Amino acid sequence: MNVLVAGGDGFVGRNVCAELVEQGHTVTSLSRSPDSSVLPDAVELISGDITNYDSIEGAFEAKDAIVNLTALPPLHQPRPGTFHDTVCIGGVMNAVHAAQEHGVARYIEMSSLGADPDSLIAYWRTQGLGDLVAQYSDLDWVILRPSFIFGEGSETFAFIKQYTTPYVTVLPAGGEKPSFQPIWVKDIAQIVADTIEEDRHVGQVYDLGGPEVLTFGEVARMLYRAEGKSIKIIPVPMRLVESALYAAEPLSIIPFGIDQARALEMTNITDHNDITDFGLEETDLMRIATYLSRR
Ligand SMILES: NC(=O)c1ccc[n+]([C@@H]2O[C@H](COP(=O)([O-])OP(=O)(O)OC[C@H]3O[C@@H](n4cnc5c(N)ncnc54)[C@H](OP(=O)(O)O)[C@@H]3O)[C@@H](O)[C@H]2O)c1
Image (tube, rainbow, N blue to C red; front, side):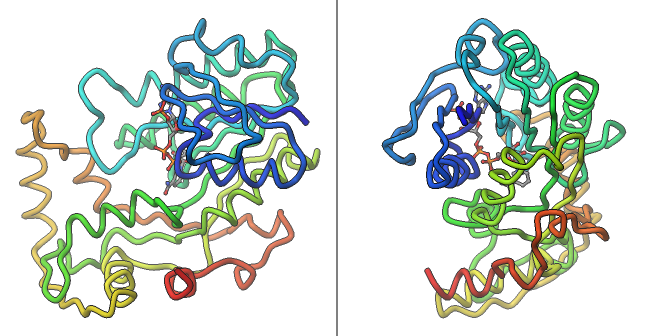
């Protein structure tokens, strides 16, 4: 099949593109600043901004499927001039419209666990609304909602390392929050490839988690243990950190604010892991400790 991957050179996208090429598909990656160094040679690169219809419309010509992976990261406030709404709602509207114009039937939307039009956090609220745009279209849509995705180039790993130190570190609530169900990026890439191939996934919304539930502090411990370093966590009250983040909101030079304070309280776990719809069991999936030991 001819597949367009919007956000194909991002962390998840580069693994999705590699998996699709491996499975014999013809793949085009679309992003604002295409980076060929992270993609197989077979992938064609196109420049376009999903928030600008005219800049992406031509990329949909003669495609059989589109995978939309564009989003702004939730860990920091968006840079000035960028907004979750324009990417996660406006971007989906543009992609759906372009797919309809060019007769691209299969539409895969990468959302995330916790996406909810009523969420107080912009990242999850706009993803919930973007999902509705896809769901109300007449395309053969599939929506994927994974928990935190880990692997080479994971922004969450980088974030945890950036805001902790080895040996002794201070964490809100002792690192007990947030908790998540990390899933390996290559397991996600296989799931995406399956949604393109298999008609039974059309019209489904899948919540996806990895094989274990971990807290922020536990992941920090694993990352340092993999480097032969220990980490002692000193707890600070969650309320104190939240008050500081609320106070920081008006200071545009500080990349944290109310959304990040709310995200600290999140439980990003599914009680009905839909990986089984892809013929997978939790024991088939990569665990973080195993991944780190093989690096
Ligand atoms: N990483 C996780 O833990 C995780 C967990 C759950 C769900 N997800 C979802 O998975 C998807 C991919 O995440 P990721 O971690 O791979 O993100 P990423 O590394 O930040 O990649 C985002 C990709 O989208 C492109 N992009 C961003 N804004 C764009 C725009 N306006 N127009 C065109 N392209 C744009 C980026 O390239 P340019 O900047 O060059 O345009 C990049 O290729 C997102 O929908 C995210 O919400 C991720």
